[in-house]
Image (tube, rainbow, N blue to C red):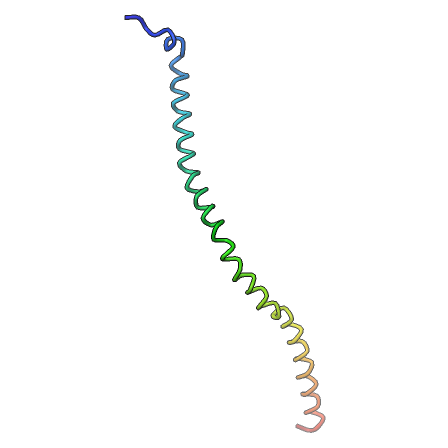
Length: 89
């Protein structure tokens, strides 16, 4: 029985290398595909999540002026305290 000349011409190392390469590629695909599917699902949900967050930004924007209000209130209270002391109270 004679050996197949095509298979005899290919070194065994190349066959092992191609097999290992195929296994590595299959493993990477098996790990990356679920990540991509999850990213796609998150991407579909993102607009629905973003709408309430934008409303929260609008609803809480006046809180940025709270320090100004506190500063003015402290000035008013200090003035009231001075007035009370001058009136003897």
